[in-house]
Length: 441
Image 1 (spheres, helix red, strand yellow):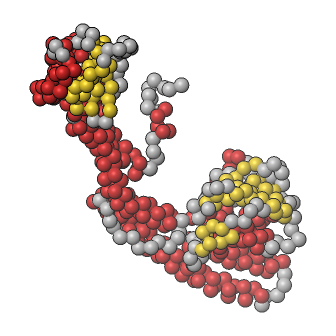
Image 2: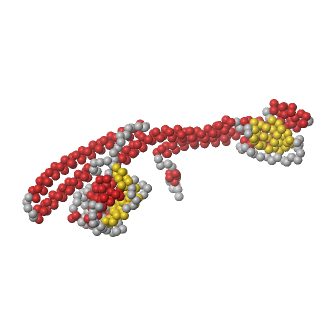
Image 3: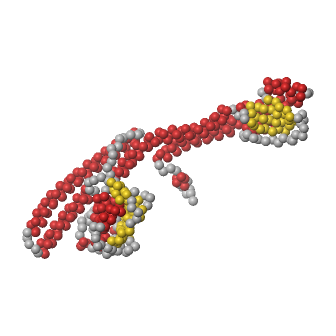
């Protein structure tokens, strides 16, 4: 049911979704609308009136020619002079058929709308039955009289000038011509916008961007300059942050390394072992902080067979209760090391809290979905978004004694998002947690 408040909502699904298609409609629709109105007014008003005048002229000349034939005393002897007379004075070609067993003629309209108007005018002028027909460029008017059938030929151009048909064809051709011109120009205007959209998408996914040159309209060029400036600022900030944290990491690792050496020389006791464990945890936390701040590892995006990559990650956990059910293999444009790290984080996290892990995949026309299901305690629905926050750690359903910096899922989601994908947490049919990853093809 169409809403009264939104009468055009129903028609939106029939409209094109692209800027190119919508712009063409904006350009062409008014032209078509104006041409339709103009054509209607011309046909309904001007053409009809002109045709009536031309038909009236033909009917007058036809009636006078018929009267001249009927007034002639001897048609056989005077046919040729009469024929010449009618052609000279009325511009009609005369033929006569004897009235021997002739059937009555029926009025018939063979070339509407001109024939209809001509028939109406002839009916006003002729007291006889007549038939209108057409052949090639002639109008043939057959009139049944007492002296036989009088056949008069008139030129079609005297009733329907060729300029009329040309005008009607032009009314149809004009929107097509405008459409062709609009398509030609709009393509050149849309290309820079498409290139900019592709560059923005690649930059958002962390891919290498080929230098784009501002082109197109003033607004598109201005938008391109703004994107280039924004990209340079973001890349400069990322570089500065990475360099700073790398320096901090190096400065922290140096005293931690000395502490490890000193602890190793102090002997073996429970307190020393606890201190050594704390130092190792500090080292692990520093590595996680640096990885999170840096983002993905250095290297380009390449065509990667995603299921083979996942299989290589699973092989890092030999003799673990992992069941893998792959779908058809598929290649995606990705950074293999980053995805390998993301898959490793998910599998490690699941095996910490669950007895078994089931991994499966499903391929669609747009993406590949990978499912990680475990039979552990799961994550409450109210906290499934919180676990993606940096340094957030669950307590209660997830054992807090397992350690970790609280960055595992944060780094994993960051990697998946930079690949243009999504990651969701749901309840598994196995009773635990379901991690669903979607990567575009």
